[in-house]
Length: 474
Image 1 (cartoon, rainbow, N blue to C red):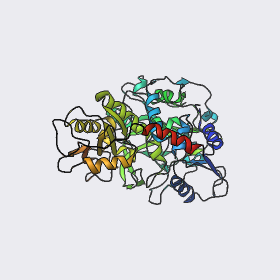
Image 2: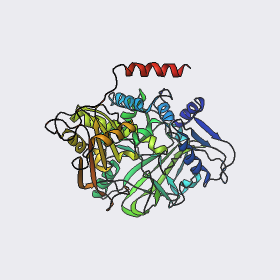
Image 3: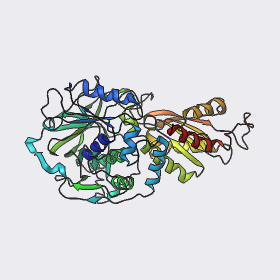
């Protein structure tokens, strides 16, 4: 089932026992963020949280941890909540094959019910803002879909972008945004500034559950996120034109903020507790002037807690990081079997592959580093044999324990690009990357003594199915 707005998905989560309504009064800080932090520690079936009784606010509604478990992620894709991790990722890859599915334009979006413009614009009147971590520089919006277009080719829908970026609230009509250089919005902004122009943007908050997934997916520059949303949903994604900028925004959003990134203007943004599990420092970042806010009556503010993993973001950016890396590698190396890039947005990537000849696995590892996502994120790549499941960490550790020889299986790539938030970099944005070859050597590489490996018995797979059935029916 495809959902057209956040509210219908929250109802579905409630029906499936995956939504906790916090009815007693809570403090905006630290209770809302602390509860979301705690929910992430509840395991693979952790629920979403819904707050509507927050001290100091008259009609605040906040949803947290909406994608914060594999159960919720499965339901977002219309799968049974018991669907396993690897199965969800394989289904994600399968549905991507339907790409592109054109979006459906609709009239009368619910976010058009109310609007503030000009001198009446006030973010604090619309959003119940709370800090997420005690060291954050202020209030943040961190789960919005930010829409922009290529200023040099605004009519090419493939070159528009829908992305998730951290946004600091700087005032009632002012925001600061962090466009990471490897992301499309940074390219849009650089083109606008080269033309001496501001960059129009629309920021959609509180969206149907597939939109945050595709907005966090590393796609090619000329690929449209709404068209991927349609492929994942199994039906076109509904969109509507934002009234001020004309940008396509999700039809079912709770809030739509419109304005411009002001060309060549920068202000200090941060620090902020990031998905790396560390605070980022303050940096000079672009500024957004807010010119219009449209919103549903009594909007729901969907927020996302980040901190020491795992948190919601580790589920939100897991399958959608694995899938494009797998597709890109598979196109060049058909021998690739699976890709696990679930950990900290793919700063570590594990790839299983067959080998054609000696040194082949290293070439696969190097290719990971040159994918669009690998350029800015992949810092360590572990390559394992085709019979090693990269999602089974005990098997990966076995490969490292028995196949990997530090004398000749470490490949360092110095001075490589990485996002500035990566805390391990000596210089922000540049790091020495590492490939670990934990595969069995094949001819002409004859190092080591790997000739007598034990394999699963042929009957084990059938017995696994039988045992699972027996366990489920006991």
